[in-house]
Image 1 (cartoon, rainbow, N blue to C red):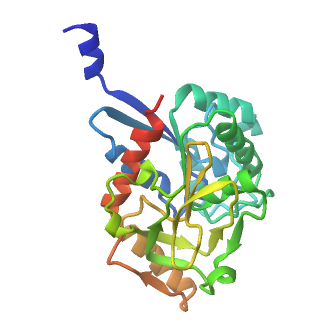
Image 2 (cartoon, rainbow, N blue to C red):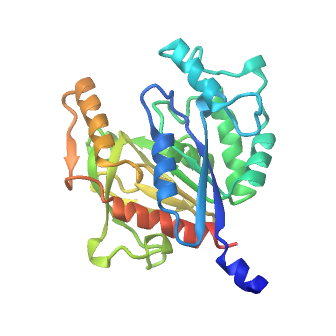
Image 3 (cartoon, one colour):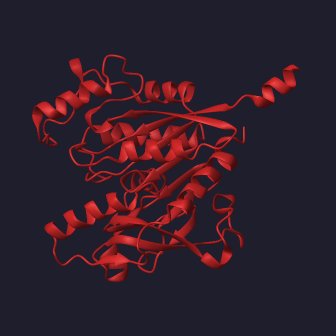
Length: 299
């Protein structure tokens, strides 16, 4: 076998850094993203994921803190609140440059999940650091990023300032979007972008799991999807490989139903939208594979 043939048979490894900004007591988003993005590996790549509990200041580059350390801490405190959440032995936090340098050297993709926290709450110590990290990863390094829910809102804030989100009720009268919601694909300069390759034109979009009461108000970005209630449900940062979704591509039906039940228990008047019986995960997987093909492997 020649060197050329041998190289062509080798799979490229895609190394994924997952930022989980949740309090980790009820949210399983890091594991769901790991499962979905690993499952979407194509024939020419392998995928590996590392998860960081950033709400507890468990950051890349911190060799003295492991995910197991954070999990044990959470179990010990039972219901950690914002007052005790920052967890770092010795309270030594990395700088934004340290985190960014570590990610650029060790990872090809960043995923950011959801949280009950507000993306504008700078009283939570991890949010200002995350803001700086995202600014550098997007605007300096153009690292491929997929951000969901809270993560997407923080990217919107980085790119558009503090007025980048709005209560959904102010936009459409709906108090929130909870359910299996149909999101319609939008064109950019009159054409679909490659992210949606393979989704039939007649389908118009994708049904996915929605768990939010806010929507984007972004400028200088390309709107990719909208719903009946929100004119901006997903966007791409113009000229960059950053994609933001207000909903959850990675949530299976059973996980969504758990959240809907919890929401109904807390707010019984919540309307659960059922544009379909469940999310169209085959289309979610198609979108993620297109992300790999057109935006991660382009180098």
